[in-house]
Image 1 (cartoon, helix red, strand yellow):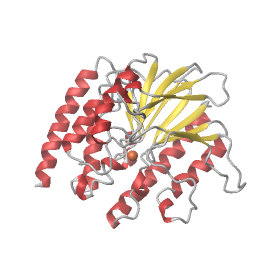
Image 2 (tube, rainbow, N blue to C red):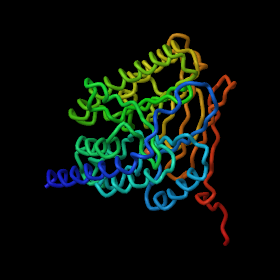
Image 3 (cartoon, rainbow, N blue to C red):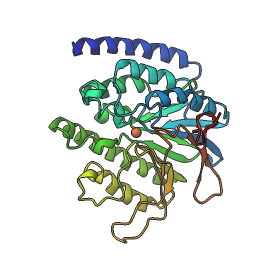
Image 4 (tube, rainbow, N blue to C red):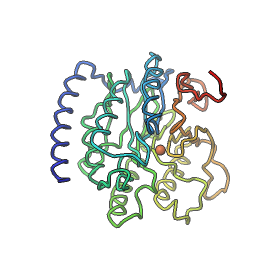
Length: 338
Ligand SMILES: [Fe+2]
């Protein structure tokens, strides 16, 4: 029965993919002016459409972001539903339609709630690997981003060695390198079952290769900053031996080595713990001291249905300026009365 569901989904997905590529053909844009060091702005979101409240409030987030005509693009750092709701085809199609309501190019990075955790009974007891395959098919059908207007992305799958990893992306905007990496919560799918660990092992190797290649590019092309976007909070504060860091240790080790070698601003954007913050959590393995050129930014999420505005500011040594955007229509009423 599951097989039949899969075939129907596949057929629908291919039809939708065809329709989408026709619809976006006229708005296809080349890669975003990779040269130059000018100013531009973009938006960051993630962990939204959580439960009935989050679903009801998401159109306000879309409207608020669409009202800012200056944004170059919007990045979603994963989790398009909460971890205790269905992973059905309907939910996937619903989220894809919502993402395509954004006026600006929309780049989506997968989260654990939409596949890793789909084995849970309250998620519909799906096979996570099967959900991941559908996710890849639906959300990354071509090298164009999602959204009403699109940009061209470089995908890791362009390399036949990594054909599976359509979701790992890279793009350059005005000499800033953006790297989207498929690193997810739930310990990066490591250790739950032998199958999950096998999946982690292959994807982890691809992620490390994509991260290494990205930094090589940044050094070679003298990019002024690197922004990496993942879904997982990789638990900087835990010791490497802590089992809850097992799925992130390889990523964190390489990220530190590359950040130090690169020497210019590196920002890691993630969601997962639903707590907006900007901090400096990377401690040098050898020095035991805080690494200055590394910053972590966590996006709003879950009950906080808001977004982050990011400005790339020429002349600012930190390159990025982050500013919270509280969506007025989604603000919580903290006091009683009418
Ligand atoms: Fe989440």
